[in-house]
Image (cartoon, rainbow, N blue to C red; front, side):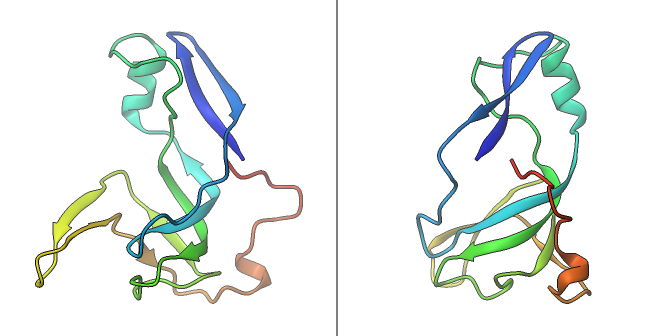
Length: 123
C-alpha cells in the first residue's frame, strides 16, 4: 500500500509500505476513501513542529472497513466509517486495555454507492 510520508520540512512523498493487517482482536483495518489534512500536518510540513523522517502523515478520513479482529463488534467489513483525529485509549470493564478510534457508523449500507470509485487509490 502507499503511505504519505514526511521526508523533511517542505517535502512529503508517497512510499510503498507493507499492507496493514489486523494484529490483535481489537483492531480493524480501514481503507481510506476520503482524507482530510490535520492542522498539525501543516505545522510538520512547514517545519514549525518537529517530526522524524519517515513518519506517516494524514489520519482523518472516511473509509471502508476491510478487516476486523475477532473482538470487534461495533463495525463490520464493507461498512463505511468516519475516523476522526482523536484516537482514544480506553479500559473495558474486565480490565483489558482496548484502543478505539471512535469509528462512527455510516447510515448508508456498504453497497456500490458507498464504495470508492474505480481508480481511486488508497493509502
